Length: 336
Image (cartoon, rainbow, N blue to C red; front, side):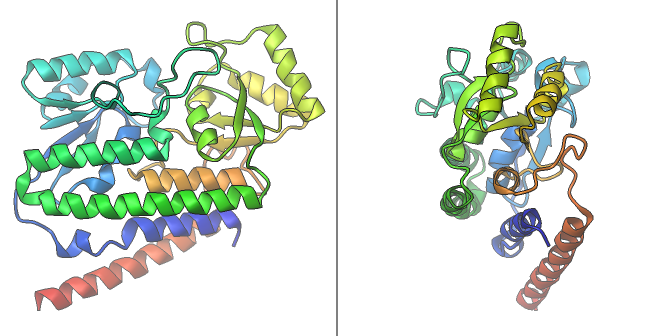
């Protein structure tokens, strides 16, 4: 089984083996949480109690910046007890205003947290795209959300606190693990060109240096011929080591630049995800997925488009079944 498979197996172990989720199921009513984008759901998902309900407004496989609000989305948002927003897209701000007008709670880390780690964008100014991919920001956001949820649902405060402690501890362990991994594989300190702005937070969390962005600037999401030629020369002479491209970048016209640069220079492209691992709202899984692609010796091609190899699926299914059987046995013994 390849290295990437082991990363995915580790993710399954981290995500599923949590006895508290089975044995501490409170009978109190949960809260309804609505996240604007799946990235925010991935941050707060592991903190939620077993009785809470989590909904994501942005449909899967839709580029967040091109999304347009519709009445169904607004209605779904208004049903929330608390809306969690990344606060960096126009339609999110419109939803926030409507939720506040309805007297509901809104948690927007950009507005509500003063100590978020916000990088300077490669094209200038503060980069609000992707701050949810920095592990320290994730811990900060999860901690504040736990406090808000506990105030809203006091009967589940103990569960929120336990979930948060476990979550923060495992993020710290993953950071230490990733540091050793990227240094051991010689990736640490590499110079990279990213596709879109979100990737900056991915690569910096793994110790790589951003020396350019193919998206150009936020106003024109394009790149000048001069800058493109500069990147091409850097890839050819080795001053730029990798191209790092996200699921967001692949939805933009700059995808053609990426294909051409990789073909002309023979450069390796590392594909990462910036919103979620499909169907799993947990930052730990997202972090492990990206780490596996960064340190993996055989990075997936664009045609793979984030599909896992069949052997990985089989291992994940086997581990999942085993753990669920174990947890059911524990629950059965406790009930008896």
